[in-house]
Image (spheres, rainbow, N blue to C red):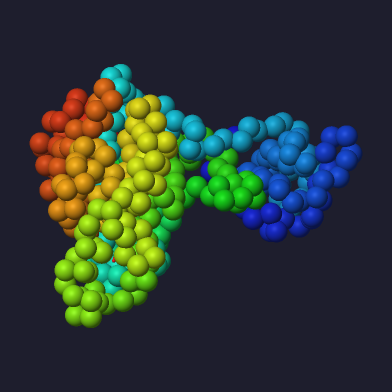
Length: 345
Ligand SMILES: O=C(O)[C@@H](CO)OP(=O)(O)O
């Protein structure tokens, strides 16, 4: 099947029933399909009571064939197997951490926490700048929080990547969402980067401070008290999460979901928040609770780690996409950079 494929909402098809080989009818509910140009063949997958089968029928400009396709899950399928761009002979991978760009509530100096606000224009520019800095570093998987400011940052950053892969948000929240967002072209899959969103990477929940102005809160409760709420390790703000509580869920997620990807040689970018990233950095750099409270992260500045032989090595922030030093960190990064240059010049 050579033609470019794309997903089509089921509702766009003219019938609400298809006929399978044995003459049985299936409702269109849970049908996933691959559309190709007129006259070509298309495979249809039917999901009925959890089982899959193949259907055959002419409708619109599609002719259905009896052959069956397998459902390809981009998260579990290695995306780099044909380009060889980040094949790991040694067990090594790049990890990029980036705090979201400035949000509308950063700009207004409001406690934000888990309130879902977007980036400002400056935040958009910061995200694009972050993308330029990492535009020569391989990215096979992206993890973001469930909040739009982190997701915008990841997406905007990837618009700058020289490899030009397309970040695609995975929707696993329901069987239907999963089935309706499937991709049916291996070629397209190879050119995609799965984006996994996880609430565990959210900013720490700021409780009753969310939406309050930081300066006004300091004027009202005292600078010291607000400093304790903002920067102590284990004292939570009223009805909110302490950094320790935030670290518990963010680090558990990192260990359970992200570290296995790095171990398998995938290069990962995480776009998240001041406090969820401080928690993860505390884990990566083995910081004490005293050390982590003085760690401040700027918005939109990517940080690079190399994961090798089970250890994380902090490599700082690439200051420019062409910064030679970054690519000298490992042979794989150097090779990737060289391949991009060859491909794109
Ligand atoms: O308001 C927030 O959610 C965070 C991040 O902007 O603030 P703080 O600097 O106090 O961690």
